[in-house]
Amino acid sequence: MKLSRTQALLALGIVAAAAAILLLVGHPLICKCGYVKLWHGVVVSSENSQHISDWYSPSHVIHGFLFYALFWLIGRWIPLSFGARLLLALLVEGSWEVIENTDYLINRYRGITVSLDYYGDSVINSVSDILFMVLASSLRRASRSGLRWQSPSRSSLSSDISSATISPSTSLCCYGRCRPSSTGRRADECLAKARR
Picture 1 (cartoon, one colour):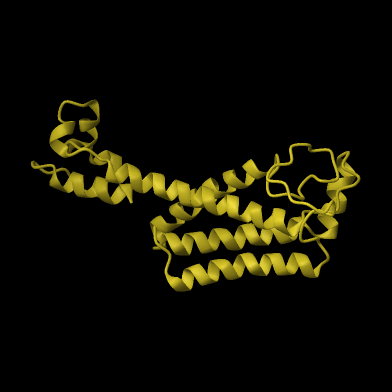
Picture 2 (cartoon, rainbow, N blue to C red):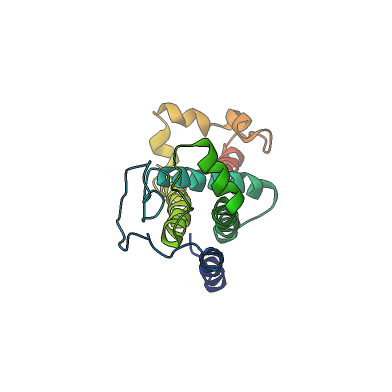
């Protein structure tokens, strides 16, 4: 789950670029109230989307899980490292933060909701939203890796119902990518590849 130095610098650059664009178009760095809160839970208020987290933060966590899944699926056909997938997700999320804070979308949001005093996210809120997405993608990656590290040995699975997924006759779980053998070795290799 390591990022190369180049990938880490690119990731920081994407976040910084999104923040710089928001600053350039006139969004405040922090809430106009003059302070920063870790959590602001009142949706219909002038401080909504101005602090580090709010009721919209979980949607960015969901973005992280969805982007991880999307780029994992794409990675099945086009080899992508975790770092490359994360950079793609950052590009999408960073772009969304900039687009969602355009005058057109802000006015549309104000027109269909009761938030007439909403003028867009603060830069710190947008950056936090991007970081919530990164956190979710990283947690999802770590949980996939953790599951693989904690896999029991083949012998300990023999009495478990899950041993059926490693038996030679279950190459169906690999969608025909390997043929069963009498030793089950090919099926095990196929399952190991499918877990990646």
